[in-house]
Length: 328
Ligand code: UFG
Image (cartoon, rainbow, N blue to C red; front, side, top):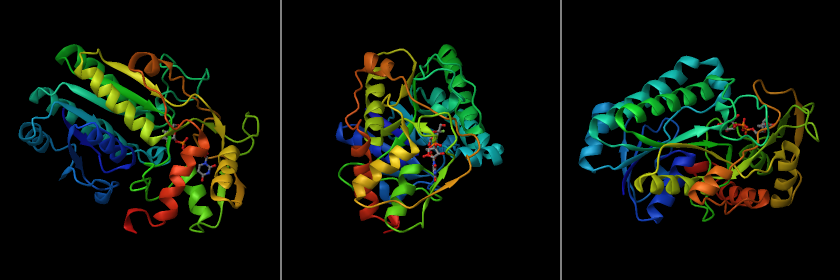
């Protein structure tokens, strides 16, 4: 298929582009490079531009005979979204609607959407199934959920078929070690643990040790970025085969605490990690673990890197060989 990937120079986007190219899909990446890295996309048609630019989108759709879109381009920092909701509504919802409109007007009616576990808010049930109530506790989750809502109505009115993938904690890097996670600023646990291992930061701060979890630290479901990437390809194939629109959780179904992640990382890097205990980070739920049976049953998705140590090993290969990220 001819596929447009918005935000294809970002962390999950670039890993998905690799997977799509490996499956012989013809990919065009659109990225404004505010967060993404040009070096993360190699040997792929690249357009420097914005997802809110409907004229540009329509040109790309026509020129490359695009048949489906995978939409990653978004702002995705939970804490920042609480401080600056306007920017999140603009990037994630307004520009997202511009994309949906350009797709409908151009007759491109297949979409795989990068959604998030943040749509659920504080879980009332673990593991979290797709039918769990959606009550986001921050603008990031709210804007992703709002675009999901629009997609549902665009499906009914205009026949836009979509798969919305609600990721839990994306982690790890392409096992070949050529691309990986490079955020600026970095806020995620595993890259920060590894940055502390290479001495780029003096210590890792553990945000809260008084949660109602077995060791008092937050529990998350870490899913390898290449397993996420593979799910996008399966979702696209299903849409191309006539599947109805759907929403899928993506996680491994195993929760690990912050201290368990640090211990696994210490085993991978072969030395102790300096940690300091700090207060809770605002808006962090105690535990988030995915129920991912639906995508397994309906699309045959299976994680290849379900083991936490393997996930961290792939991240370590990237971070230890690219301590300055793509700017190395
Ligand atoms: N943590 C620390 N110290 C750090 C960084 C993180 O203790 O320096 C803890 C956090 O408190 C949390 C866990 O490590 O308990 C994981 O934190 P991340 O920042 O790596 O990931 P989040 O769980 O906050 O965020 C992820 C996705 C978001 C998504 C969110 C859903 O990255 O896109 O889950 O709540 F919105």
